[in-house]
Length: 416
Ligand code: BGC
Image 1 (cartoon, rainbow, N blue to C red):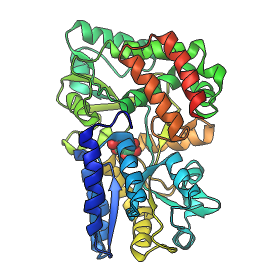
Image 2 (tube, rainbow, N blue to C red; image 1 turned 45 degrees about the vertical axis):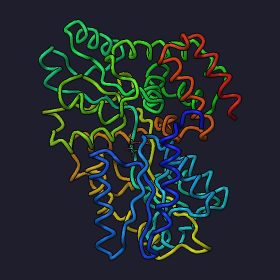
Image 3 (cartoon, helix red, strand yellow; image 1 turned 60 degrees about the vertical axis):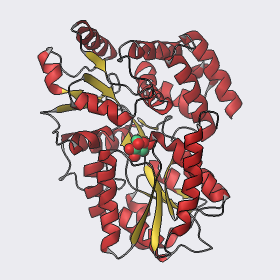
Image 4 (tube, helix red, strand yellow; image 1 turned 90 degrees about the vertical axis):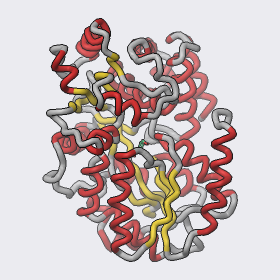
């Protein structure tokens, strides 16, 4: 709560009041899809429901990673006024399920055969105690870089494969007076970059032992110190106004040629598409240098809050619409993510989307698919927030890398 300001607390209170007016045949949907690209994707879902005669009562709460949305959700549930459906990530879903707050979606899941088509890595967060408790919309991944192609071309730079090639490209751009890295200084964005940096610095087994197993030796290692040093390199190559900047404004810097690279999840692609840009010619997408073949993922899901025993007709319709193969294609083409079903054709996806689908399948079968720490799929919220705090303090110069490693070990141990 310490990070929340008065304005935000006011917004929470307003949210609780506004939601009281929902019509019962509507679905009230709490989500954090507020950027241009996200809103365009959300419209695909709204339209789908409207075509079925179900009204949409929108409850947007800005803030990537969903931290603010989850705060609003807690306030709503405490006030006895839970929304019908809530965008949620990973461990948060399991947490609400364990509290008995979520509706059982087994009827619709059985009827539509979700067990056979939703990837196992997602089922781990969509089922609790043998019951389906959320409907997965997509799979995003956080180890991507987005680049302005014309800017790279004019400096003779191609997509870097390794950290060394990346630092060379960044230094070349900086020497030419170009802002190398578009960055938004918010804890969740710093943590998003950290996902990829940790994977790149230590490799997949290091990522797993540090972030999934929360192994103290890995968390406190020289490799982790090197990861913080790499974060310091990134910090040294952002512009002066990075602090507090929203992620989509950082994406806009790359779109407009004001900066070369943004390291961000593939929701960034939604912004490029929304601005009429094309992959390959206007912008490049490539895996964070040193993470080819590996994927740190997060899947957006909609959990339905139990409105008194059974799932309502509107909730069942929403869940069914979300899992339909045609919706999965139409939505994810716009959103930048890839489908949450293994049987959707990649025909309508652009080159980045096709690569995303291929990478996901390959990483799943080679054992290189891991949940994103920054986006709630590696560890529960308390641990995630501890990582946010340490990464942010280091990024803003409060800790050197050695101190950051010590603080990471102790903050994670306290959070468990
Ligand atoms: C969500 C994405 C969203 C991004 C930025 C992530 O946590 O999974 O769907 O686009 O935050 O808002």
